[in-house]
Length: 117
Image (cartoon, rainbow, N blue to C red; front, top):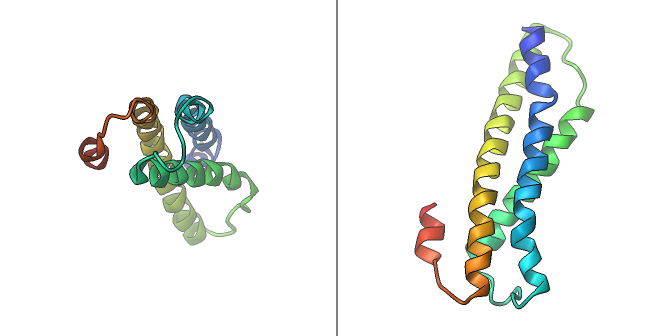
């Protein structure tokens, strides 16, 4: 159980957090061109905030204390597993968001597809 807990804690969440931030970067670059906050669809803003929060929480895992007993380790391992799954979904969503940001800059409305994804 100790080895599995260590694998959940380092370095997988941090790698996924870095990837989701890197994959979100091409979407955020669109604000330097013609895209504005007012013309950005709400689903892109909400999903970008979610990606940033989950990505930053992946780095806060490093500051958690090691659990003292087996029951606390089980609870902590479950939380880390959920965080890893969320971080993986954030990587995929950040790839989609990069495309949706580029399309939003051109003025095409993909709200239906953005909510569907």
